[in-house]
Image 1 (tube, rainbow, N blue to C red):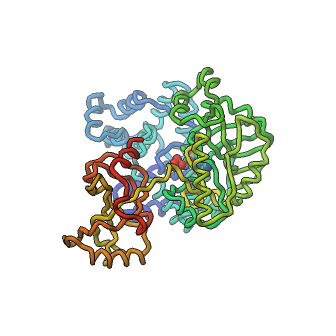
Image 2 (image 1 turned 90 degrees about the horizontal axis):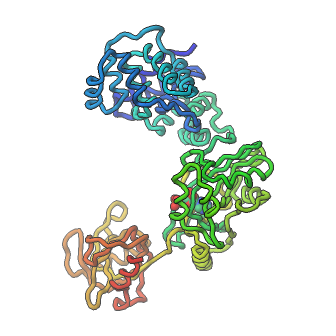
Length: 543
Ligand code: AMP
């Protein structure tokens, strides 16, 4: 027997009424712990604010006018009163509760199963009237409090005071599971209901990778300087081109193939020309890749390719003018075997065994067994080569790493923009905070314009503790003026600063500012007369 929806509602109310996370967890955990399997799944999904699991493609599509018809009928109020209430609440669920107020509900009390069945039926019904009638029958049985949440969910108003992260924590707590494992299962299954069930039964880590149920994609961490790569993990490095297109997860089983976006949307019909070549690959698979177009051997810039994206069904013309290619760079399942925990190296072997033909291709890649300067020099060359192929930059991956769905870790690194540095001179220094307390660690620096020095930025990190200590001593002895926190210093310390971008800005006297400046190294070898000039900065910013 399904439990009453009223219990779910009072739990949701309790969660909403407290700003304290621990109290929210406790209320949820207490409630979830009392439910049988079926109710547990329903309750968890509803707490996530959606009628169906995230991976489920069904939609309710009940329009505003059908919803307001139902509410006016149930509450016996008029359109003016409804508009007035909406002014006050700006949330149709709260309006429903407000209008219905104390009016008694008809028929039997709703159970969780009733609510779930209503959503199933509405999604399956075709046409406005049948959908409205199904909703009307359920709202007739709902109290004001129950109607609030049903309407919130139907209208797609997911603000019921719960983020999925909080729900995951509560589920972990209800069943004494590891918070991380719960998150991972949620990512993998795309269903908080199933995640709750797995938590209850202790089967969180059982492999899942079902066809046509997309999972989260593994993400990369940016590196600003090639020297940083080596600090993240030791050699060997798998270096791939970073393609500037649309990330796609491709599922194939039987005679069906589908492409999914990063947000789990089905995007197959945007790239009809890929379907046949993918179907031609025997067996089942889940491939991770990037969709883009090539012209004369070079990648077409994303902005040009993007003109295809807006439309759901691409006109024949665009398809022939700018046919898309799938660049495959990873494989997550092959012929019934989930490969998420297999090392990247092994996944690569399996991937590259697939008998593919264009427009499906493999990512450009190399394996580098290098370190130190040799590694940096090679990455530098490869970066330029990737840019010449029209690609955005490089991805550097750890061959030992598993596939971590939905995670941004250090096992995939992305090197995007051309790495730029300029040489500048330190003009002022500041006492640091936290573990940099007691040392002069924050530097303001300038570029040169003829004889003048013009400040362009300020940066903290980058130097070693030893270097910072030495520089502190030096700056104390070369202070021009001590303002307390800050001191101006003799401008003779040249440093190299790396950055992401330079843009016009009135923050500094040079008229430019840097995005993400970092001190790359000290340049004692460089005289102040040779630091970069305003002219150089103008050129960099102008590009
Ligand atoms: P970003 O969008 O800048 O965070 O970079 C990560 C994105 O790069 C991924 O989501 C992919 O869409 C894309 N990408 C392009 N080439 C690759 C590749 N070889 N490996 C992984 N991701 C790639």
